[in-house]
Image (cartoon, rainbow, N blue to C red; front, side, top):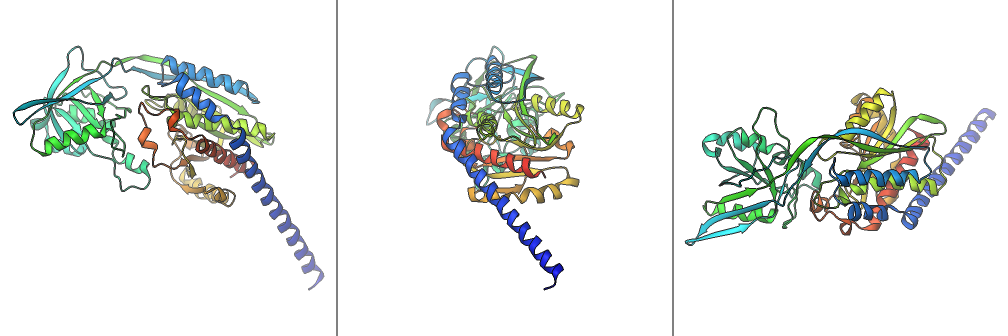
Length: 465
């Protein structure tokens, strides 16, 4: 071997030694992140307060204001460079009195009546002073309405009964395949003269818990009431109809749509020491539906994000890039917070190298999915995928996929939009229900999620994309 080759070999050996040493350092630090959060993390304590003391936090409500003040106080007491509230305009919808829904039918010469477990869908109108009474017409999709037309639907109450597909392994895919009837069903049915709609709850579980969620009216189409019923009640009605029994229903609800109001995103950040203009965002949405505690949806995402800051402080970690924690307002029924945040960020010519959203519950972490503008995605994803070597020992995978509703408006900045992906099998058991409370959350699983997100933040901060 000549002198030149000997030098090259020596340089290569030194480089490999430094690389292996750096890898060991990262592996040890990620382990330290997990140890710190699992032993000292506060996220379950914070989530208990949000779920049980603050409660349901629908945008524009007093509880939402309490949640803003609570998380602002938490951030202000952390070692952050700046904490602020960012104003956003939100719709204000109040549920009103408990919904009254029953069905009536004749069987063996006897009139039968059954009370249903029902919840008004978000942003829906009410029935007025009098209840609506009419025959139920069962349908299994929006296209079915157009085939049936006014001759079969006028003066009736449409019952949307397409279930989530149980063959889907990832339950979010099953949800996406069924939720259009909840979101758009009322206006589609109203076009054919229907008086109201009942919608099968968006869950794979068979139980008596109705699931609320947003309903969207089409401009220029008459607004009619829209309510969800439990899966057990949906199956009961469907079985009667299959027997050829005529089923009538009575619906009474009195929600109110009030003028838009001003609410707030809550934001805090630690400025980067080397690349402060490159922002790594972690966030969840602070609002929730009014009927439960919003523990999984999305109190978990909020406390995950707060725990990132808490853990970095405990570990005395000073980031190279700016780490920003955002509690978004109004994801559930308007996206006011996400849109306001992106508008202000773009106006200030900010650049989010990565935005990480946690809005899939506090269950066992499985990994992350990501998206970006097509022109930059391939390069960003290749570099992002390299982090899997550090995360795979914790059973975390990195995949192409969605980011999240609140961070999607940042897509034009051409950074990477990342969605935290925990196990999804139980999420829709609780989603938008009265049972989405702290007792549905496992403390260890919640902390594991926070540790996974913190680890990814550190990797992106150290190496960029």
